[in-house]
Length: 418
Image (cartoon, rainbow, N blue to C red; front, top):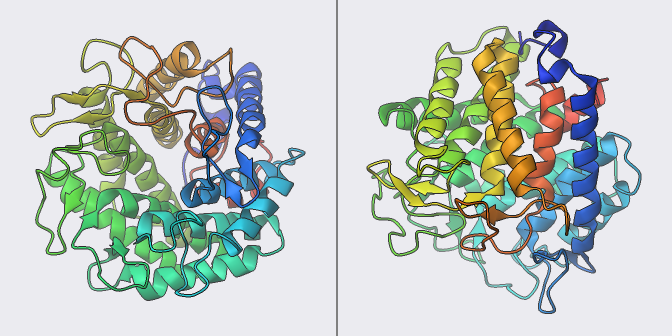
């Protein structure tokens, strides 16, 4: 069993059974895809401002380029015109100006050849490569093989069962840090790599990462996810206390990541069930616990709707901005739990969060979603400026209609739901 397998097994009143909801998801996905084409630059993709334009000083962003390449590959696999050329463009950029041809690995921007090499970024490059291979675009195999070689040689720590965090541009000076965020996205990448390469070691690595972070760390902390550790696995409670709005490593804890870990745990469980017929019984329990903690400490924690960005160690609101990606990941977590269990409570939250996105985050004047809003729904740029890229929002429009396993690109190829 991978999940309930088909929305047809859910009650007839479930949104997942309703053709109008399917049409709404498809239409919203197309809006996101079309809007994001403005981010194309000669050497990759760049960040858009609130108007949906590239700022005058914009430059290609490697992380964004990898994520856009992956998202457009998902769209191209669905047969959406105009998206495959965007994938080809992204692959060329990642193999060209965004690749470090001297030291290997990837540059976060062509103008930053001496920037640090981050596991977070390289996980997305591997994800983009796996999706490009599924699509069959030129250069996809080279991108996949190059990125997996880097993950193997530089980032994977066999002794710890996690990804190392970062290195200097020449692969010296390993950072004294172990982070939940980079390992969370590495889990997603490992699941996709397992599907595309057929190599079981990637599934095993996803299981080792999730076991440490979800079943050991989060479970010990009441199904909340501490994010910052040193290389000896001491919790860094004051990490970035002076930078609470950091966009990747904020102080405290991030309820949106509770949600993201929740649905990735379910996807891992489904992948193990498909492969072996068995999976650890804690996976569903821990996925449920993380989702419930995300709601308890994140949703309307300051009296206003939406899931806020961060909480402190007393689990009180810290940064109240409502980031778009947080709501998108909560949608995916709710719908994956719904498909896994059929419980009507998850249907309620799936609807509630989509209603919030539709009424508050979707920008019907300029397009796409606001990257973040304040508690009262007014667009802000406290943490995330401009408009977000496709990655989180677009996946939230297609995940509801796909099984929990295999990973999204592989599921699209084997599904008639999209």
